[in-house]
Length: 498
Image (cartoon, rainbow, N blue to C red; front, side, top):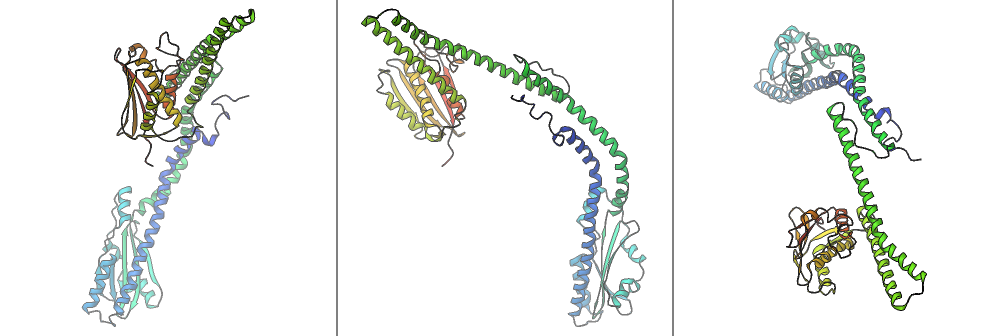
């Protein structure tokens, strides 16, 4: 037994439901600030390492530069020049301390700001950091600081300190040289204080608000999903109605009303198509009844009494005509059904529509069915499309034969092929026949509609033309001025460059 459309598998899995997604969104919004703080702290740790690394590298480079001077005395101008150049390059402060612990050279190019600090100011607000000079003075004389004592003992003298407010990070490194001890100091104003305060406060705030947020998320998800589920149930109930009507109520929020209106439009379209199919079947049965009735009448006449030669010939002719008409109807109906399905299994290739039109016109010039009709082709010498060649030939031939039959002796049929700038190929077939009445123009492509009057026609030819053209991604239209002929225009996508 087939499952109901739209009811496959019942309700969707919870992990794919709108309830879970709404809940997850609310929780994500709630946790986002805390995640941001922790992520920013990780970035801060990398910044601390970078500031310390800059100081350490500058101290070693400065010591090597002074050693290269051959132990120049602190008063040598070259010592001051080298320290100043390196401090300017690394944007920090370099000081030279002699054996007595006195600062004999000082080059200060420490800005105290960097990209991370500017981003922190932008996101968390500007902070008032302690003055670097005041912080440095509070550490005591440089020659008496622990890092100098460690350097004198040959230990690695490097480290970082935060100011009391944690808004100023100061890193140092000391390296010995032949001219004295090089002390490198780099600093950065950091938003660490704000972050540390937030890191402690946010988890407590989240613990308080998370239950309330979950309740809010569940309420929101139910508010969103319940109307959708009700609409789904009403739509599925239409399956069991003999004639589903487009009467889903337009209730709830505007978006839900739009969705219900879309369902109603779909149901109305399906009802129109069902009615069209019923009318088509009725027309088909009507068209088939005439040849079938003729065949049955001939069979009854032959069965009732022996037929004379003349009568037998007449019955034979009627049988042949009726069987031919029946065969033509069935064949055209099958071709129309395949074309309306899109011809998915038919091979497509590049087709020169201009060459195809010229070939068809040449073959029709001597056609005995159209005596005295003049044919002409104009336009592009080459216009390629991608399609099923014999189907496109049937489109042009059908339009040309239709135009020629209405033009009559002395009439003219003209085909124009044009490749337009919007990458479309346009084929126009016009005639000098009586034209099409305005009230009939919108029906010429309908199944079993014909304007031939007393002449017999299947009424499927132009319907087949439209189906084939649309299966190729194109369109077809008709225009006419009564008494001045008719024009049929076919548009198809131009083939891409080879």
